[in-house]
Image (cartoon, rainbow, N blue to C red; front, side, top):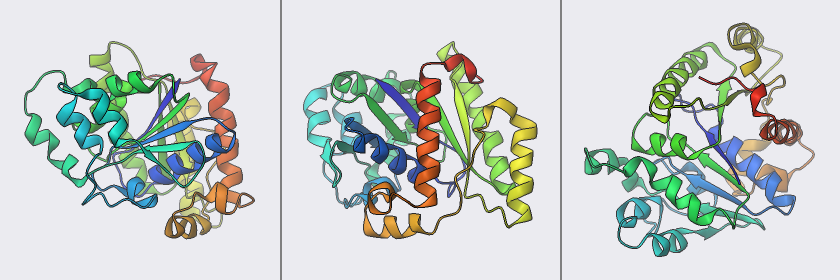
Length: 265
């Protein structure tokens, strides 16, 4: 089982698009794949036709019932998507209250890790869509994952979000007692603009081997696919965005077996 967390402390950089695209590519290969929506905004949940404002069983339920009836909470929350082999653990907007509700309760940083241990024999591939803020939800995601994927929009303000994310990762790893390997993924690249070109250069200059050596380009078909609630690899497999994510998946498959090639914070 491989667990990837997709995170950045800046919104709008392509986290949900990355989760949907990679997961649907894996599912199309016949591999049972699970996606988790850890963001109270619920973009991933909405993508697949569920309302995070009204949904009854969700990741929020896992935090409520992990001590009393964890297995029933897990399987009641699991949703089939409109894609074969692709399943969702959805978000609820109530997740935004978890930090206040849990307070200083111990043991709540491992709820998702325990959940995925129950599902490990069912899903060889798991992707977690993380919230853009540090709190119990992001801590759970980073504690549960094997590798961290950090999408970074190729524009200067997004580079600041990357620095915050790496700082957070350093703090989390201090408590994990070990480094978490990560990959920086340049997204929304537009070779026609000086901003994209210079931002990509800055990424490579500063972060070197931590940056994937290709890019996810601007592709308006992602927006069309989101509106339709269909992953772009299913709706338009020949699009340049899908071709790029296919290359990324090949790279991730390679480093899954060669983690020493990745930097650790």
